[in-house]
Image 1: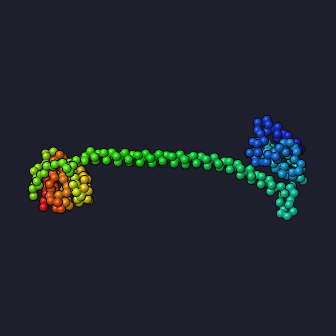
Image 2: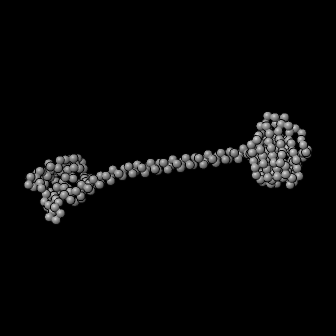
Image 3: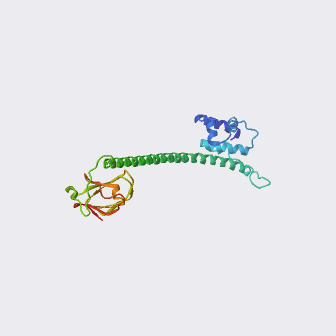
Length: 268
């Protein structure tokens, strides 16, 4: 078939399939002016070898056999002219270049979609992590606030200006604490001024350090509590609802204060 009449057929087939020249150009990457020239059978200054290469690309895009449009050349003509300097077919390099451009464009188009999908996945993952981070910190804030509220409820109210009953502490044994202590009791300690304190409840150390002025601590004991006080006159104790305000003189240290079901004992 004459190459000059192939363009008209290609144009007819393209139009029957509802495709525009711009659609063909986007897929084949062949310049729009070249496509127009092929369909108009108006290429006169282009090498036949280049022209055949473009028609092959066009036919491949439409799913057509290119031999039906450019024909089979005679045996003598099938051997391409060789470049005198390098010994390679003159048109082979051009066809290889066009094929490379086509393959590269198709691969690029296929590679973009996975990249877009990965980008979406990364965005969603970041959003989920941010949500989890926010929920975790909100939960921690609520827990801390709840603990603070519970501590405030159990805080021992001991205003300094209010009168307090003073219970004399005997060298050996005080009167017994209420009977409820036999089944467990709450021990509270309040600092009128700062003092070093070590508190052990049921054999376990629950506090060791300086209790600042105006601060208080409380613990729940099953059997006994043991205290060591750096300044006996700086602190007050409360066992359930019974208060012990005068444990010793200011500056006096007590190392063996025992509270159990038998009462409060101070060994000096």
